[in-house]
Length: 216
Image (cartoon, rainbow, N blue to C red):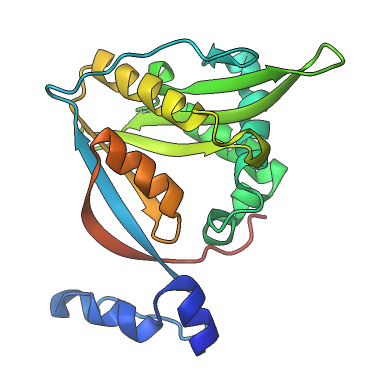
C-alpha cells in the first residue's frame, strides 16, 4: 500500500497484521491492494448518567420511528454521509439506493429498537420537509445497545442536532433496559469523537476495517 494511502487512512496491511494476536494471524489473510480504515469502538455506561432529552429548536422537528418514514430515514442517512470518509468505508452510505437497503436491513433486525431511532426534519419554503439528520439503534447479540449510524447533513451542522439525536437515542436505550451502549467511529472523524467523548463514551478497542466493495 502506498504512503499516500497510508497517510489518508492511517494503516497499511502490515500495520493491521501487527495489531492482530498471533493465534488469529493464522486465520487471517490481508490483501495488499485493500485500503484499511482505523476505527475506534467506543462505549458508555448509562448507569448514573444524567440524560435530559429536550425538543429541538425551531425550525427543526424531531420525528420518532415510524415505518411510514423509512424513506425519510434513508434520505437523511444519504445526505449526511455521501461526501464523508465513512462512504468510502461503507459505500452503501454514499448511494441513496444503498441507504434505503440499509434502513430496511436495520429495521428488520431482531434487536431493532424503535425508541432509539430518530429523524430530524426541517420545513422547506415550499411547505415540504427536508430530512437532515438521523440515528438508529439496536440491541446486539450480547445484549448491549449499539448505535448504527448518527448523521447530520453538512449544511445543518453546528446547530446542536448531533447532541440532540444522541441524547434521545441514549434515553431510548435506557428505557429499553440497557445500560451499556457501543458504537464504532472512523478515527479521522474527529468531530464525532469529540461529541461522543463529551457524552461520556470512551475508546475500548481499536479495529481496522477493510473498505467494503461497492454496494450492488
